Amino acid sequence: MDIVLDKKDATNASIKIKVSEADYKQQFNSKLKEYGKKVQLKGFRPGKVPAGVIKKMYGKGILVEEINHLLSSSLSSYIVDNKLPLVGQPIPEEQESENTIDWDNQKDFEFSYRVGLAGEYEYNLENVTVTSYNVTVADEDVQEVIENIRKQQGKSENPEEVAAGDMIFGKLEQVLTKKAKDEGETAYEKDVLIDTEKVVEAEVEKIVGLEKEAHFDFTIRKFFKDGAETIKEITGLSLEEAKQLKGKYRFTIENITRQAEAELNQDLFDNIFGPDTVNGEEEFVAKVKESIAENFEKDTNLFLQNTIRDKVLESVDIALPDEFLKDWLYESNEGKFSKSQIEEEYEKYANERRWSLIVGRIAEENDFKVEDDEILGQAKNFVRSQIGGAMAMSPQIEDMIDSLAERYLNEDNGRMVEQFESQVMYDKVLDFVKGKVNIETKDVSKSEFEKIVTA
Image 1 (cartoon, helix red, strand yellow):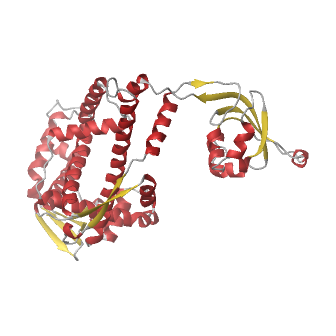
Image 2 (tube, one colour):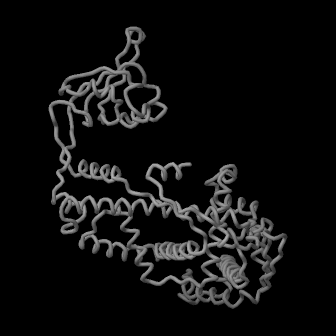
Image 3 (cartoon, rainbow, N blue to C red):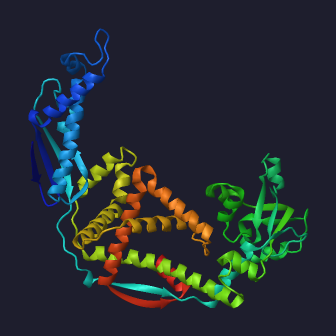
């Protein structure tokens, strides 16, 4: 077998593979014999069908299968052995399609593949500077979380009169004008649940004190704080349909629900953080503050990771075979995306590929390895994130996490193992990069950080 790399330029090349009969003959004949032992034909005893008959009936299919297997393994080995910086996967040249090959008579074959290569590049992490933000936990942040906890852990009540913050269930009816009625227009009606927290304050004041079976009229476009978004939410209409609702509406109250706040007592503390974790209100407040700080840290770490990625990419020039990659993305996705869609998203994909190349190179240069216990740890972290990252993890929950993690590692022929291994390797590379780039730390408030993220 003869394999030759023909470089067109720094990022585009073709790989030509010449296959002679000697490359596949032994395996081909072996497969024919296997078929001969299994095939049953009328007039022949099992395993006694002549080789010529087997070859005539199945030879072409076996040959195609063997050639394709040989091409796949040889091409992969060549790419790995020669350390080609491949991006995307090889694309068979059109003129070498199976339709142009005489499988019945041809002995030697020649195939050609288009390949895309990443251009050579250098990187210097010491030249990269990023800002890491430390979000300070304010007292109002702690109080807001505690209020939410008390509401979530409180019991539902059904009072007789509406108060601010209640949920009211009832019938929403459009109030038609006389002209609309005369023209035969049908009034919109629907049973809905309205959260008074989403109603503008001036309208809430009109509702407070109303009892069940009472009704009130309002202008629907001026009633909710978020306008059409809330109308869409309570009615189930699309946003465009919600925007069409206008004019006067009447709401008849059928039920009132109030979420009474849970008391700040040991039962609440144990329910949130687990038994014997905190004792008393002072420790509870401190633990809530600690949890908020941990969540802020996760958010700022993720933002730092993305910033490092962007800044490193800005500092490195990696040429890619753009047209090849666009063709490959179109063909490999089998028409799921149009060429115009690929064009729109290409720059994002190209940067993901560039970052992946840098991560892979750093891992290889520093000989990073991933151990089995690290993969298991990553699997457990994944399970924790799936169950909501609860504040407290009881021994029973931890046992469940261990069991689910083991199950994930044994499912889908190890597919999840590869994902967890990749994540662990990525984290190792990121920690390495963090230790090399210049990181400036800045304290900010929650609102300041939110503005920075959304800028």
